[in-house]
Length: 226
Ligand code: GTP
Ligand code: MG
Image 1 (cartoon, rainbow, N blue to C red):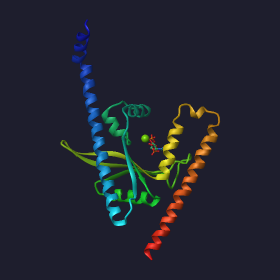
Image 2 (image 1 turned 60 degrees about the horizontal axis):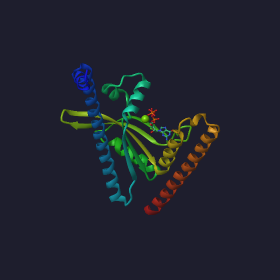
Image 3 (image 1 turned 90 degrees about the vertical axis):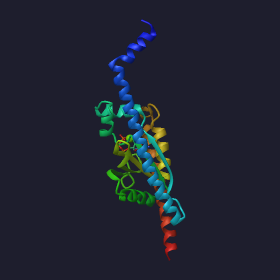
Image 4 (image 1 turned 45 degrees about the vertical axis):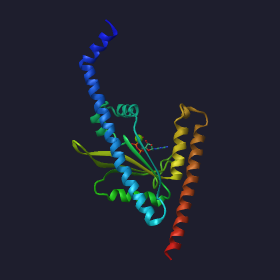
C-alpha cells in the first residue's frame, strides 16, 4: 500500500472523523474560555480606570491571563479519574481560564473582589482567602472561581474563570517559589526542609512589608480626610 493510500484510508475511517470532530470541539471550547477571560479583563479595566480618575492612582498594577495547556487539562482530568472530553472539562475543571490581578495594596484586593462580586451578571462559585489563611508554605493570594455569561451566536453560555488577586509582594514571592519548587526532584534534594523553611521566612518578610505599606497608606488616607 502506498503512503497516499494509507492516508486516504485513515481520512475516511470513522476514528479519524471522530478525532477531527473532538479536536474541533476542544478548540471551540478553548475559544469560549478565551472570550470569558476577555469579558472579565474588561470589567477589571473599567473598575481600574474609574478608580484612577476619581483617586489619582491605580489599584491594579497589572493583569495576567492564561488558558490551561491541553496537556495540563488532560493530566488534571486523568488524576480526577475522568476522560478527556469537552463535557468533563466544563463540568470538573474550574481553572481552564485564569486571570491574575496584581494590586498595589492589600485593601485594593478586597475592594476589587467586592466590586466584582456585586456585578449582577457574575456568580461567585467559590472563594479561598489565602491572605487571611495563608498556606503552610507561606503562599498568599485571594482566589475566586466565578461564572460569567458570554454571548455567542448560539446563545448565552455561563463560563467559569479562576481569579487570583494578590499584591505585588505576594506575586513576587509566588512566582519565585513556583520557579524554585517546580525544579525536577527538588523534594528529594538534601536540605529541602531547610529550603522550605527559608521560603517561609521570606514569605513572612513580605507579609510584613505588605502590612507596613498598608499602614502607611491608611495613615496618609487619614491625613487627607482631615
Ligand atoms: P489546583 O489543583 O492546583 O488548581 O488546586 P486547587 O483546586 O486546590 O486550587 P487552589 O486555589 O489551592 O490553587 C490554585 C492555583 O493557585 C494553583 O494552580 C497555583 O497557580 C496557585 N497556587 C496555589 N498554591 C500555591 C503555592 O503554594 N505556590 C504557588 N506559587 N502557587 C500556588
Ligand atoms: Mg490550578
